[in-house]
Image (cartoon, helix red, strand yellow):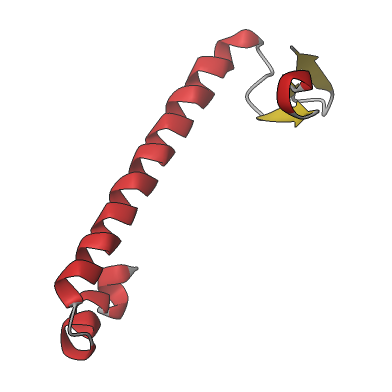
Length: 85
């Protein structure tokens, strides 16, 4: 998308601190890529849990501070949710 709209050229033409701004954009791209790759690894790690567990999963947190607990909710192919703690 950034290349499609010519954002780097736009920064170079319109911003005195274009180098710093472009470095920030590249850092954001790197971070977003790392998060996406980690999410893929996490979802691949969850898939063997159940034969129908590939539909979706989420982490739900409740409470605050030391009372906080987390649960992983897995939706199977039939739409049923299975919660693990």
